[in-house]
Structure formats: structure tokens, C-alpha cells
Image 1 (cartoon, protein in one colour):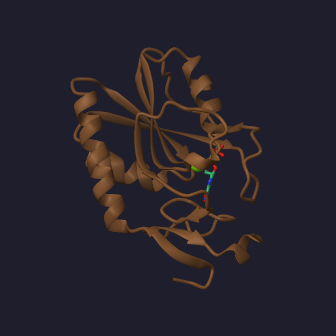
Image 2: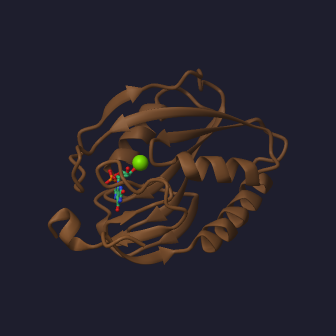
Length: 179
Ligand code: XMP
Ligand code: MG
């Protein structure tokens, strides 16, 4: 662990075990259906890759990129689509896959945006959630871990584009982001 990291919050083994549990639930809930999983770039790349491989259901994968943060650590609430879906989701069973729900502002925007396209169903799976940071209430069907209101990195999550490749989720030392 480098000097910028404070501690490991969730180990790779814990993430693997949790994704297997979530995948089993998803397999059960979508049995006999063609599920489209939508990963939110870039943070959800690791979750998508590992969750998708843990699923036995028939899935197709698509990606969306939205921006709500600059290089900093606070949500602006202003969401821009940087890359839209390639798929027409009208009539599809869609599961949004997120790395983390912080204020919930990004996801609530995404839910109403995708919801307006007429999917047969729209649910959310997130690896991490910060209950204390919630500014809007979101109905999340599959949650990995509730975590304290601290800035975390690793397993897809970045600070200024760094640390995404860490195999675990860790907390960043406050001196790194001026906390
Ligand atoms: P909101 O606040 O809109 O934020 O729910 C959603 C997006 O913000 C990013 N985010 C984080 N990224 N460590 C990160 O590396 C964090 O602790 C963190 N909290 C929020 C993330 O991209 C998420 O999708
Ligand atoms: Mg994200």
C-alpha cells in the first residue's frame, strides 16, 4: 500500500464473495429473461467484469459514461452524457451496475433518463453505498456494501484517475485530497 492510502476497507476476497451472492440473486430474479446490464463508466468496469462472469443468466452488456465530478471529490449534481448506450432499451430488462452511490444525484438522474426510454424493467446494482451521504432516496435492488462517508478508491474507483487498478477498496489518506 502506498503512502496515499490509509487502509484496506474491503478486501478482494470480500468483494469476490459478495459479487457471487449478488449474482446468485440476480440469476434467480431474471431466470428465463434476457438481461441487459449497463455499466457506468469508468468506475463500474471492475464490478461489471466480475459480476458478469459470476452470472449464469443470459446477459448482454452495454456502457454509459456520464460526468458529475471534475477531478475533485464532490458531486456537482450536474450530469452530462459523455457516451450514450449503443442499445435501444425499450421493452428490455435493464440492470444499471454502479461502483458507488454517494449523494445519489448521478444515479437518480440516470434512472429518470433511462426510465424515460421505456424499458420493461429498470433496477440498480451497486457494489458500494454511502448511506450517510445520500441526498436523494433511491430504490436500489442489489447492494454490495454500505460504507462510511469517506472517500474511497480502488476496484474501479479513482482519485484524479489513479488507483482504479487496485484489487481492493481502500480509503485515501486525507492529505491527498486536502481533507
Ligand atoms: P453521486 O454523489 O452522484 O456520485 O452519488 C456518484 C459518482 O461519484 C463518484 N464517487 C466516488 N468516486 N470515491 C471515488 O473514487 C468515492 O468515494 C466516490 N464517491 C462518489 C463515482 O464515480 C460515482 O459513480
Ligand atoms: Mg461511477
